[in-house]
Amino acid sequence: MESVGLGARNYAAMAMSFCPSSRSFRGGMMRKRAPFLYGLCRRSLRVTANAGGESCVAVKEGFDDEEDYIKAGGSELLFVQMQQNKGMDLQSKLSDKLPPISTGDGILDLVVIGCGPAGLALAAESAKLGLKVGLIGPDLPFTNNYGVWEDEFKDLGLEGCIEHVWQDTIVYLDNDNPILIGRAYGRVSRYLLHEELLRRCVESGVSYLNLRVESIVEATNGHSLVECEDNNVVPCRLATVASGAASGKLLQYEVGGPKVSVQTAYGVEVEVENNPYDPNLMVFMDYRDYMKQKATCSEAEYPTFLYAMPMSPTRVFFEETCLASKDAMPFDLLKKKLFSRLETMGIQILKTYEEEWSYIPVGGSLPNTEQKNLAFGAAASMVHPATGYSVVRSLSEAPNYASVIANILKQGHSEGSLVRERSNWNISMQAWNTLWPQERKRQRAFFLFGLALIIQLDIEGIRTFFRTFFRLPNWMWQGFLGSSLSSADLVLFAFYMFVIAPNNLRMSLIRHLLSDPTGATMIRTYLTI
Image 1 (cartoon, helix red, strand yellow):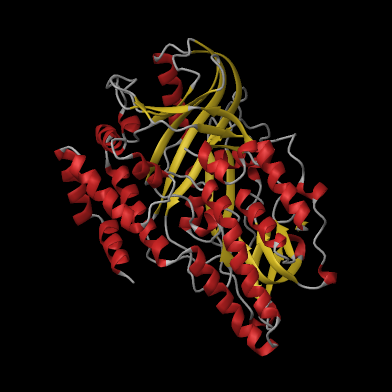
Image 2: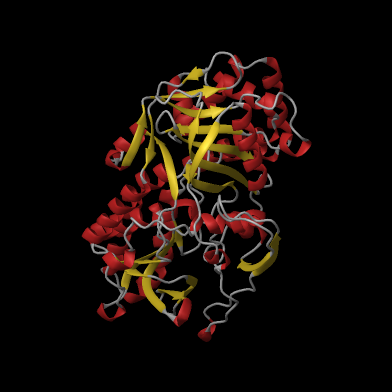
């Protein structure tokens, strides 16, 4: 739901390679295992809203393992690449604003890998605290448009980056009694957010290298060597990966954790006639049965809802969303469901402005918190498992995370070289514990339990779940969506939900707790001190 995006212009960029071939390194520092290879062939691929036809494109990408491949886009990888490579002409190029990384002036304190909102925010906050920070990654614009609760962005001092605000938000679960949430919702300007985070990087002195990172290895003196394409190597005291969920080639993740699920959505921003939605209300979820029980088996397998942002009475962003599924709901099917829904509602499309393919991995394993390399944002599994939201959490936690890294690195400067090598690992452990303390792990285990439940429910079960969810006190459901409830609050949330739920949902909750692995994991995590 967070990522609401807009249309592709360039097909050629789809075949870009994310991962290099296997390499071995001199001096016994590291041997990178062979990448995980997949071949994809998709026929009748519609590249833009106006360009299609018969084509078969074979793509081979290197990934660390199957999980990493799924996080990158899996069977929908071509669409994900189209979304990533849209042209956004107004957004500044990082290489035009930031000075190039120069290793001649001494080693960098911190290298941040990845140039999305999480990476830019962490780089700026770290440099502001006096660290020598380098940012490395492809110079790509923000192509996703984010929807946020207005009060959360105001708390971050970023209300100026919101381009449109709806003073209330509405949910439709059936044809009766729509639910007014009573909370303002905003659409973030990709341009304004990008320029603001870039401005902060410029002012704090961040340097930049426009290259893809291939690996991170440890030198004999304890420093990290960030190895990029074209045989470029950037040494630093510490590296943090903020390059998105598919970062398995740079990070280690816990073995035996939950499998990643996927939230997919297909959207279009269009000029229409007969728009039935009030332009003063943002449509958070519309789960009404527009097909009147005529859905095919493949469509019924993936319950979806409509997410709608009326920018005016006639210009609307419509997005058909699958909240989560074990296997990604195909974009072709989402597109079919969206246009079938709009046709059934009597909405006539006069002009298509933009198109989006949103792919958000949710759940999955946490990073191994004993590794030296750090992570932030989606690479650190900070995406809310049950909603897909992550940007607000990343932006809000960047200052504190940067402060912890800065304090530890500054302490290391005053220590001798013998102690410094040993303290590198201590640095990482303290930083990981800040990002994922036991309290956060308990909260995440609860959210993973909820994610697994949602995936198992059919459309009627989902309607019942959300009908109960929005009957909770506002602070409970708002806190759940915003990841602000403590683990104790979540226990109260579960108890309250169980009390007011109808009997069929109660039985589903009990059955899920007793039979699903996430139930046992949640209990075990809660009991860990």
